[in-house]
Image (tube, rainbow, N blue to C red):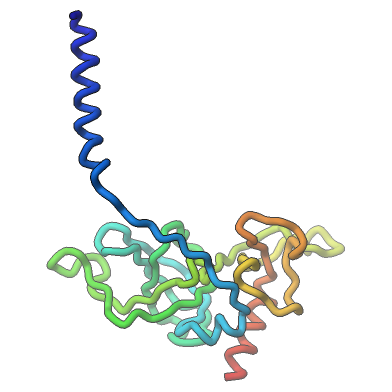
Length: 202
């Protein structure tokens, strides 16, 4: 037997031995389909509805992902200027604005370490409905208009396959057009106006 054959056998034995324990372990994964909720009901279900700016995040020191954000405009819950902590989905962009619909968790979130690290123990709220209650707000060139300048505006990305908007709110592209994850843009000013009406009607 050559040294090459011996190395191959050793490598194969190591590979098999490292895979055996993993093969014995079982992990159950539950796939949950998001609910289809109209915007008014979504507003009612949430403890916090706010336009926020995300200032930082932590995926290391807590059992779940947590983001820190400053409230820019409040429609329900914390006041403008307050700091909120939320999660648990990764992919939220630091420094960006989001419209969030959040549910307050009963227990505060504590760091994994014995000492208070990063944010320490914080009141924590969750994005719900499988992540679709977090809506990115940014400047986009996807809108209509007679002038080129009208095509670009601040917008909010709403996944309308799961969040049903009032018919008065136009989406870009229209509902009839198939999009990734059923997500479309609405003009931010128009969307904020609807949230203000929902806030003021309570």
